[in-house]
Image (cartoon, rainbow, N blue to C red; front, side):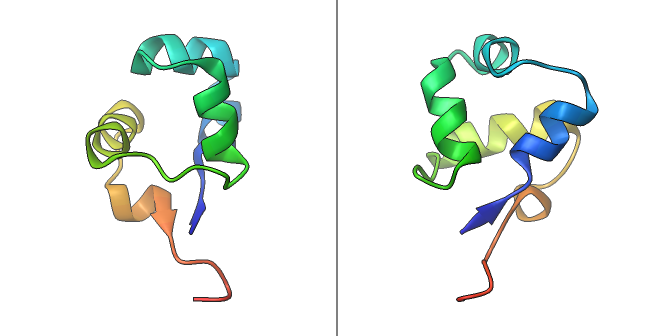
Length: 66
């Protein structure tokens, strides 16, 4: 699963730590999501979507391998 969290974060000039604080998770969690090593729980994915004003599907999508 691919995601646009890094792009969205950088467009808003946020550090991983700032986004993590807003989401009440660790910076390492944000890093793992951005690098595709961790798929967030539904509540966290929904919180990220609300934060960025998008839908979950607009942020998280299937990668080229399906």
